Length: 340
Ligand code: ADP
Image (cartoon, rainbow, N blue to C red; front, side):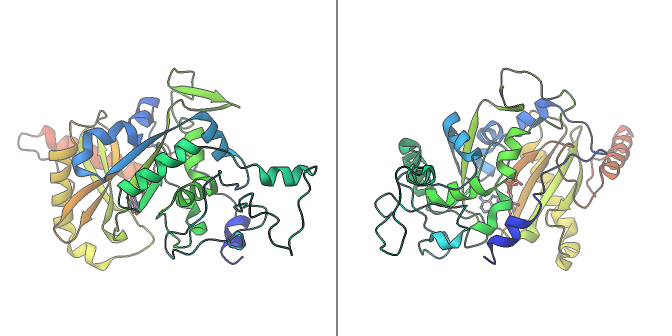
């Protein structure tokens, strides 16, 4: 209850576009889908398996309640213990298999004519998909980080016993995705902040006034332990790397100031050698991680420059001003592209 209550009673903080954020367009949002950019950046990003999700599974993710599909039993990522129904609120979760139901003499016998009992007994069947997810987890070393086209279910970590997004089973993946408003919201409202609107397009499907992409993927990324302090968000405008912000803005990391010039230098080199010219947009945001051991940079994600993307320690106005001054410097005979 302690874990469930705060999350259940808090108001869901669905992303809203900052009115001062730069305009973004549908092409920006489309280019930032992980299945679009990943193949071109495979050597410098995290190993990832892609699984196409069919409409019936996506509908299942959207449904209220947490009835796990047939053959999927919850095993937690961090403790290895089997999660029991008591870990969730009663109305939220139904994991017991049909054979288990009614086996406990203390439990009320189910009534086949009662619609509630019928619902309890009906678990969706996604046999082949479950096997594919299970195999992908195994192939990726047994621990994965799940996300859909754009977003990870970061708002649902509370439901995972490890309080993170590490999944070791199909059940972990499904429970996180079904408990998240972010991952699914981002799919149903991905184009809401676009200046060219959530219009009709061959790449999207309209369901109950929501416009979502026709192709929905589950990306399972190999679990990668990252130090939050070494995650950065980099802002690129018209091919100029204009700003680098620590990604975790809730903490002050003293040592980052000391390492500032080295961070700028490795990130600039990474941008120039690995990203520039390979991503289809000239203005965008990318998230990257610096492994402290060898200062190797790993690409984590791409985001549009504006819209729902958070500018973190910058304001969009500041970033635009930095861009203007870099452009002016660059126009001078010996100008340099600098992120300092
Ligand atoms: P979103 O697009 O929803 O913000 P990201 O892919 O950017 O999702 O990841 C969000 C956070 O999750 C990252 O800042 C990082 O801390 C963590 N993360 C991302 N990928 C992995 C991974 N493969 N293993 C472990 N943690 C990860």
